Image (tube, rainbow, N blue to C red; front, side, top):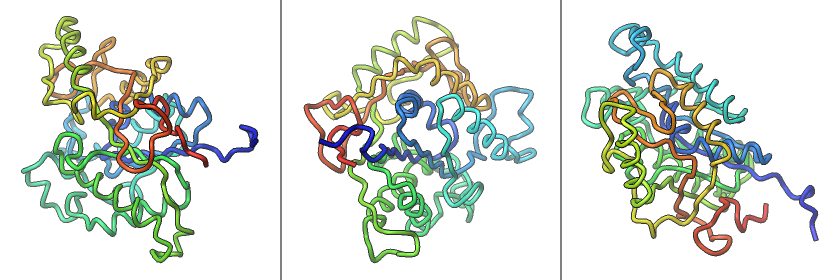
Length: 295
């Protein structure tokens, strides 16, 4: 029998659209696995230059003024990753390679340098380089709607799944390293019953002027679609600290938070996933994204 210390290290890759997405969606998962010795790699596809800014004192950063929000958000992401213990975080193709596309239907969608306009295969090539270097067994990505329809989230889904395919093809760009097959791919999910209950608690807390609706929450699915539940309650504080680090985008109040719309949402430390490629490692729902992974 192989001793645990002799097994290859577990390696987790997460792909997100903008700085702050990772902390909101996967902050507790990242903190838990980093604490357990997993090699966690985050790839963020844009700097989030098109975001709104919450603190009035930082309003000058926005795209219609100094247009320096992207650079500022690199610092926020650095602080957030320090909070969850993740040392390996990168921007797809390098910082600023792809610009924030803004919400669907706005003029920023047509900017030639925005992520929405990027060639999927070209962008996926940058991610293949990361995959073949890091050789993760598990990939976490958005679903085909990007969770809620944001163009950068949809494009991040396309790029992540294309890289998953290309990285395993030995004929694809061998100069990037040997082919690597990721064992399991998960989508970020939120069980409907969980978010409905949690939103009621947020409304009762009255920490913000209003409360988000279920339709505002990315990745909501019927409970039966969830195939993995990661208990990160021991890392709730780390997740909250990571979210607070994104001060231009998030306001945290106790167990609740709001984005620039000031609509409260629950800050949940248990995070949910759906396995879409690979085999489950035991009864569903799994409690470990690496269940059944040999190495």
